[in-house]
Image 1 (cartoon, helix red, strand yellow):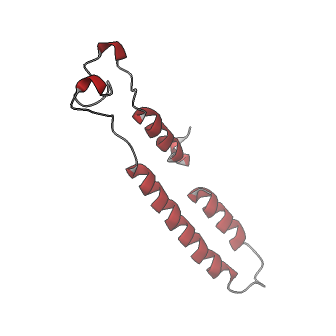
Image 2: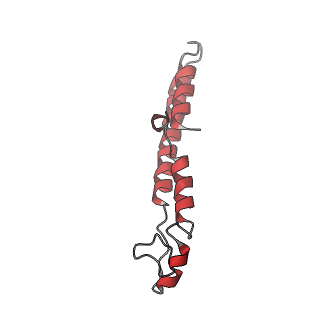
Image 3: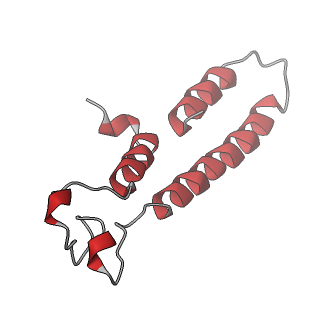
Length: 100
């Protein structure tokens, strides 16, 4: 559940009848804990981005590695999986503000 969804759920539950004392406070604590966990997971995902594979024998390096690749037949596209992995991370970290 995203932070935005948690906020909407919390706001909806806060409008509950007054006959449930303490419910709003309990929900606020749970919401804050869940939001903290979401932020922690987002930070961990952000840190798990990969760089392009580089090997001292540049023949085996990814073409997008900092010093490139000696095998011109590989072209200019990533062949180590870093671009695909980083795209997956970026798709998970998309926030509602990022979407049109």
